[in-house]
Image (cartoon, rainbow, N blue to C red; front, side, top):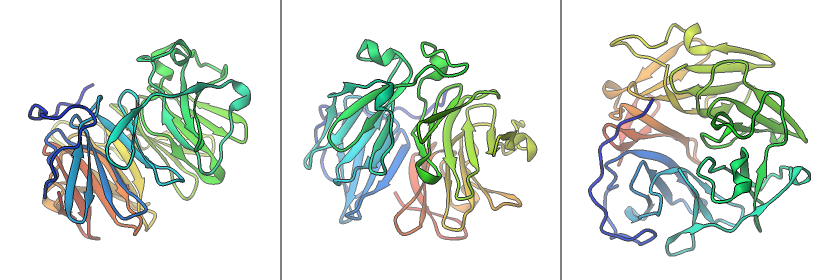
Length: 326
């Protein structure tokens, strides 16, 4: 399944070029990612128009060679990284430039340190033969390594099913979850776990404070994993695809707010909040205009933000509903 978004106006700047400053977020294609950095600036990644920074009330925007920005991260040194649909870029203090340097590790190089950044692999659009095997990138502050997954039960590393589909999720004790198109691979203390016993088409993943793993999929709903038990949360709540009715069948973002509530961003139906007992939908009547919610983000102060498309925009949750911001 695909998601249709409005086509942006033709760009007038070259990739990596800083566009003019603007008092408004200029995206028309949709918002895919949000980050508040340690300086208090906000960064926004678009569906097909590059990235913008909000500083002192004004936006500065850059085109990228691949203009879809899936995720934005800040490393231990304060460098801002952009995970594109294909490849990586980083902010050099003045502009956003592609980052192509990489090394290729082996099984002995698999480890996870608290300050590491992890990025999805680019296969099957790999720039090197080693990247044709399913794997991920790790930035340790000094070097970028591509780490292929070792032989795992049921995993054919050369199939599209086991290539990265979304951003990496962190869990308790440094546990990592790598979402694939048709599976989830976990890594903790040198041990890999494969979740592929249920039909998956992964677009989002989150481990909550209780250790419950939530897996958002494109078409098959939300899976909830507690211990070794996996259930289809969407079916359990009667929220599958229903003509003309709110649905949790296509979930592209998941997060947890300061109160421990789980939020789901959907295609077509806005956002939903699960408080442990019931689901509440947030859409246009509650101030959330975007029908497609691609990103749900909790900032450093605990405020929840939503970004999406149809129409493109960013809204902030005020405790009762959403307030349109940009």
